Length: 290
Image 1 (spheres, rainbow, N blue to C red):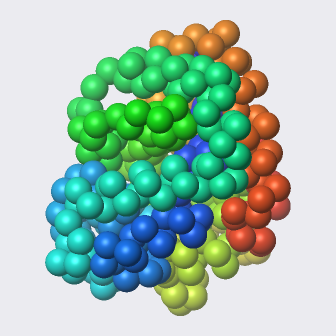
Image 2 (image 1 turned 60 degrees about the horizontal axis):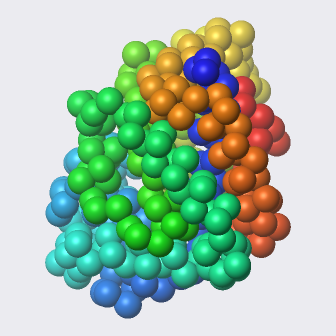
């Protein structure tokens, strides 16, 4: 199992983790326990595994969000709902969404149970939590029992483990959170520019300043596209990210990864067809690995 193949697998499966940030069931569960709809539910929902942390911890571990939008809701969220309740609400909402979108015949199927087992084998290959704070928080949680939630929880662990390593790669490359967001958007494989900027809470002026800084470093051209140096730097980041996240996929092995992708592809297609993700949020090359 080589690092780039593992990276492609991780990115393909990530969509089945990410639905938790967009489906109404999760938002509704959060509001029911007292959180305010909108950004609060995202920041509290994803960080609750680390406990009642402050805005600085969230900004650090999430990396490319404007700290000001985090400070507006964290730590106030913890006065409205305790982290344990937030974690439970998130899992319950994801379970409801999986059942609605995929159908109970899928969530309770032998194929889902097999996929859950394969993901758990991959997770078992993660060497430890050192330097991986978001992964460490999620790894301290108890595994759910239902197969579709085992599947989702395992994907979440793999996603946060990879994400923590990605931040290390970005820092190695000398890219701040905002610079990382701008350059990734410029590749066309992530979020569309407007969605990336507004979702992460940056003003147009702040975005333009960062673009200017990246032009000064000769990483962006005058049209906002990556220069050759910019393309090569992003390649370095992605290569290092893949290497830092390889071990769990090696534990599963090429045959296991292939079988997991075979099982999950129809579910991924169903999620996309269900319109879980808003129109226009992805760049023109979304789906490409590089």
